[in-house]
Amino acid sequence: MLWVLVWLVLALAAAGVFFLLGRDLWRKARALTRELGVATDRLTEVTDRLAELSEPRRPGEPNRR
Image (cartoon, rainbow, N blue to C red; front, side, top):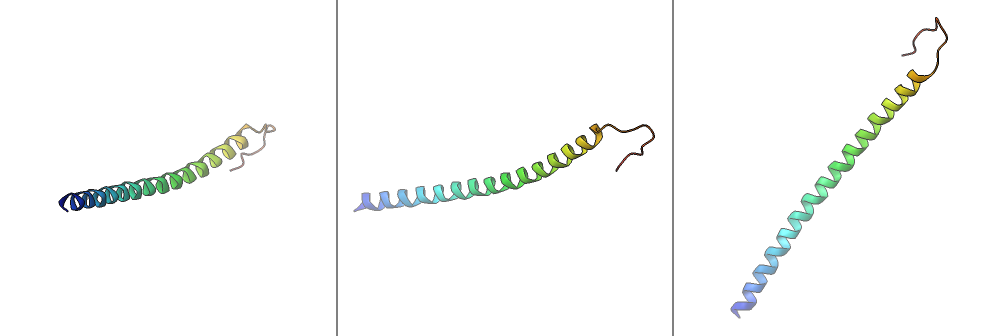
């Protein structure tokens, strides 16, 4: 009977550890996707700005900002 109790406690402890690790991994994955969204937005802005700056201008034409 004692061995059943020991194994039950070990199984519950392992389940608790797996739950905590899974929750931490889920939170990190959500933060990563959020940061990837921000990086994508910034890259889009930089790409648009570079495309705007690389367009040839006629002499005397004012800068577009």
